[in-house]
Amino acid sequence: MTVAFDQSTWIIYKENCNISIPQAHVMPKYMYSGNYTKEGASGLLQEGGKARKEEAERIMEAMGGTLESYYWSYGEMDFFMIIDLPESMAVKFSLHVGSSGVFNGKLTPLITVDDMEDATSTDLPSMRLPGQ
Image (cartoon, rainbow, N blue to C red; front, side):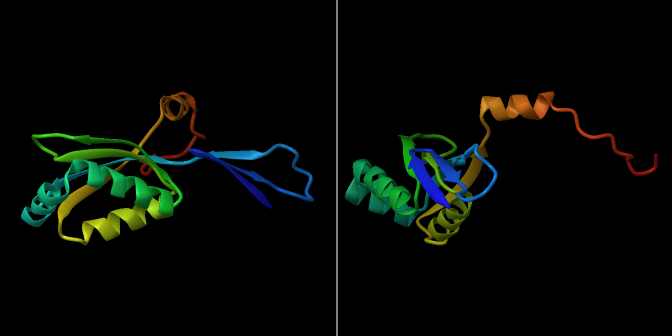
């Protein structure tokens, strides 16, 4: 099996089989948002915002993904990141940084317009609901 990478898409070519069409898989996209604790806000003041973005870029790359964007905010959340990561790595990232105690984070899967279009335009097989 050969795997080719292209930013947010990976393609698997199956060798020595009857399938001649490559299988393309779009890497999942997530929004990660969070609020700093007192300890986290203190660290942010010491290091600055650019250092946090650079660290996010480094860890995303190390986990096989990318940081698409990083925003600071005030109000309900302190920061937002749009990230592309394999699902297992996104869960791992969320668990590890969430357990650090420097901020409370939330991982939200994002759905593309095309995926939503597919979901709303595809008929489900007929099924008997309970009690029918």
